Each structure stands twice: as structure tokens, then as C-alpha cells.
Amino acid sequence: MNGELLGINPYRILAMLRRHWYVLSGSWTRVVELIYWPAVQMIMWGFLTQFLAGKTSFVAQAFGVFLAGMMLWDSLFRVQLGVAISFLEEMWARNLGNLFVSPLRPSEFALSVLLMGVLRALVGMIPVSLMAWWFFGFSLYEMGFALAAFFASLMMFGWALGIAVCGLIMRHGLGAESAAWGAMFLILPVAAVYYPVAVLPNWLQVIAWSLPPAYVFEGMRALLIDGVLRTDLLLGAFALNALYLALGFAAFMGWFEASRRRGLLLGQGE
Image (cartoon, rainbow, N blue to C red):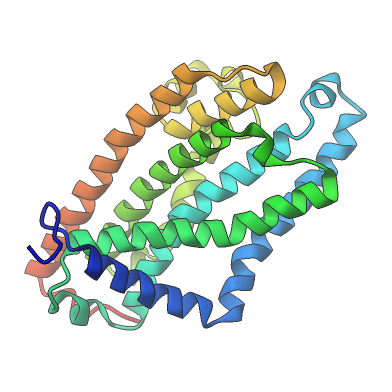
């Protein structure tokens, strides 16, 4: 069986992870970029929250709600973008054809870029979360188990969107590259990151409750403001994430087969 489980060889996945990790860790500019953007946003929202804390009773009661929302949103964005960037680096290097004439299966390739997306997000967010504690005295880690559940749920949605975007770019080429950066911001207005779903018009509320991030950010506010862990929201988010993840994988595999039949894998690149 060569260590295979359900037709997936973990050694080939680890080999791909090592390849992308060497590319990332061997370039200090890539590491700095992962930390720079979330750090800038954290500092901006931290100062804004400090200003608003003395102006409104809501923010004074729930200090850090904006800061936590920003950092969790950025972790979601970084997971999705990390998946897409790991895939795009293979396209930019014209390496997809080389990879898929090897024993590497598309499912193993997909799993490797998903795991790399999480690693990229953690490289960026762990230092930034410590900076938030140092600058503003706010620690995400005080949420305990809830933080792990929130991050896991957002990670799953980032995976689902990220792997679907990879399939889209594979099928339509680098002309669709902008989807890697723009896809997540399409859902930002209805993700309830900085305000509750209830402020949206009724028809937008229906869309918001069909997306897992809305459940996560509503649950985050319930925990920070009321001190209540809404397990019903968490369970709803995980159920939707399972559906979106299955759809994302199906889209990736479908676009991969379409690209393979048309001979597009050998011609992709800058």
C-alpha cells in the first residue's frame, strides 16, 4: 500500500509541503509580506478602537471587538490567499505539467496547497496577535477553545474558496488570476465582520446566513460582548463549511479534468 490511505499518499503531500516551505522560508521578502499587511491593519484598527472606546458605550463594553474581527477576517483571507498563491507559484514557474506527469495525484496536490495555506496564515497571524497584546493589551488567546473553533471554521471556508479559485485559474489561465485576490472581498459586506447581520436588508440577511463567516463573527461578538459561547452558531458554520468544502473540491477536480483533456496543464505560465 506504500502508506496510502484512501488512495492518497501522505509522503507525496509532505514532499509538496516541503517544496513550498523552502520557497517561502528561503525568501525573507515573502515572510515579511505575510506579517506586514495584517500588522498594518491590526495597528490601524487598534488605534481606531481605542478612540471609539471613549466615545460609545457599545465599544467601551466590548473593547477589542473590531480588533478581533479584523484579525479573524485577515486569517480567513490569508488562508484563502495562501492556497491560491501556493498554486499560482507552480503556474508562474510553468511547473504544473512536470508535477502531474509524476505519481502525484491531483487530490494530493490539492491537500498540499490547503495545508500550505494554513502555514502561511499562521506565519502572518501569530506575530500580529502578539503585537496586538503588546500594543493594546488585547489578546485573542483569552477566547481559549472558542478561538480554535472560530479559526478552524474560517480555515475550512478559506480552503473551500481557495481550492475552487485554483481550479478556476487552472481552467481559464492567468487571466483569472485576479480572482485569487478579489474573491474573498466579494463576501466581505455580508460576512458580518464589523457589524451584526441584523443591520443588513432582509434579502442580504438570507445571503449572509448562507455563508459560514457570518456565523463565526456573530459568535465572536456574542462571546466578547455577552460572554456567551454560541455553540449553535459554531455547529451551523461547520455544517455549511462541510458543504462548501465538498463543492470546492468538486469544482477543482472538475476543472482539473477539463484542463487535462484540453492539454492546458503544459501551457500554463507567465
